[in-house]
Amino acid sequence: MDEARWALLKASLDAQRQEIARIFTKIEERQAHLDDPVYLESLGYQLHNLYSAFEDLFKIVAEFFENRIAERAEYHRELLRRMKIPIETVRPALLSEESYRLLDNLRAFRHFFRHAYEAELDPKRVALVVEDALKLKNIYAQEIERFLGQLRP
Image (cartoon, rainbow, N blue to C red; front, side, top):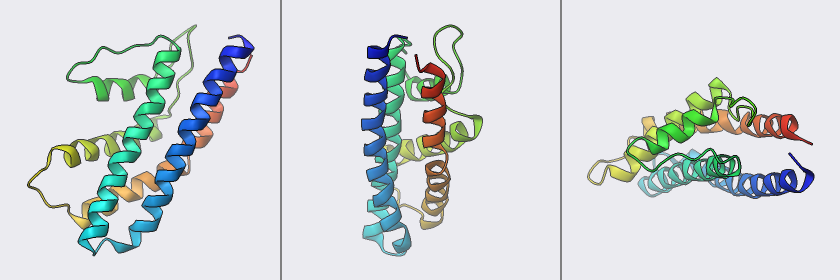
């Protein structure tokens, strides 16, 4: 990969990482208030946004390497799955198995949150999703750095 393309990819990923960090800050601020329905809904919304921000990061990688996934019923699951597999002569894997599992749980929560119009959020379930999100916070940046290090020209 030439220097200019690598710089573009790095800048795009860095910008998305800043957005992810901003959302993590909001999650951390709200997590202590799971007993308050307003905070609980806000936390659910931020968890929804967190997965969406990660998915936008995955789209940057997929589009950069022309690793497109057709819009279809399994699009979100397939995009995430694709990020844990290396593509020989194209790109290394972006995610470890652990990050993939944590993100898949977050993806499932986002799906529930988007489609559960009549359901109430369960504070215990939201707490588990927050716990997974915070585990992810501790490892995803290192994985992106590893990914970029393998691509550096």
